[in-house]
Image (cartoon, rainbow, N blue to C red; front, top):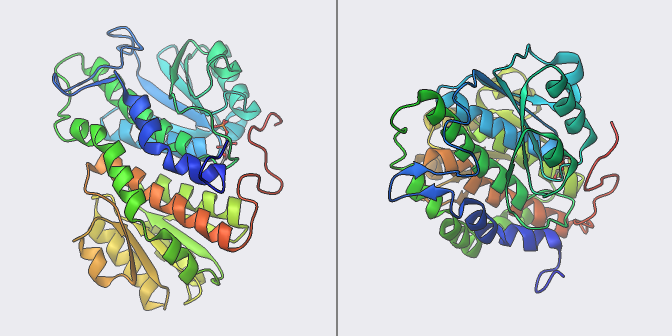
Length: 360
Ligand code: F6R
């Protein structure tokens, strides 16, 4: 049941410290500074020459996150929408690893992409929450995110667990390929281990409800981020539109000036996500929106330069740049939740949506 919470969504947002602790349990070894990920034999990925992720919706945002971490680790990778894959898959060979990211393991679009990749000779791997699901059974390998059941239609805790597991998997693939000493994980590993405590602190002190109340009558809601903040901007907007039924869009920060700025007015709050990767540029992009009258809500640690210039601040604990976006995402989940609640939306079962989409 929902226990003390009004909705499963809020319960599941609050479960993230636990679900993330479960996800990384036994998979990280900070004493040897290694990503153990003993789900796979040593050298499993040593012949991989490129990675394609296929996924839909929120899982696609996690896939994009994973793909960017792989690129940053020097491995060629792309994230593709599973429903576009049949018309636009890049070339595949035996050394292509295709990773399906699907919470339910039953999404028709994602299963189709997985089957096509398999038929073309790729190696396949499924990252999922559901043991025994179709995607888990059909792929060559599986990695379970261990988030526990998610009842709310809006994916929350499964997104954060997917993203974290993909970051670990990315480091593991890069490590197998290098076949030498591990990457410098001196900052990432302790940050991973303190992630549950960080999210606990964030949940305790979040101003998301106040922000949702203050901007509830806006016309449209924009989310901007760069690097690993970009998939979080897309996810922030998807969650917002899904449960509030209000218009929201996510953009790469640098894209704002290439068109979307035309939409910016005092009626369009801009949530700016700072992850420690070229933050000064994102700050400039946010200020361009502010000049047009838009209120800017900076999602960043205390003491960050953006706190000074932004209209509002949603605080995240200091962490490794690889994880900062995921902490920001928790604040954005809360903003969506409270905005939807204030509007009297059903939240756990938004109109026209189903938890698992088994048609093309
Ligand atoms: C959004 C949401 C959907 C799913 C998408 C893929 O909150 O839940 O966008 O993420 O339908 O579902 P899975 O991950 O089960 O393949």
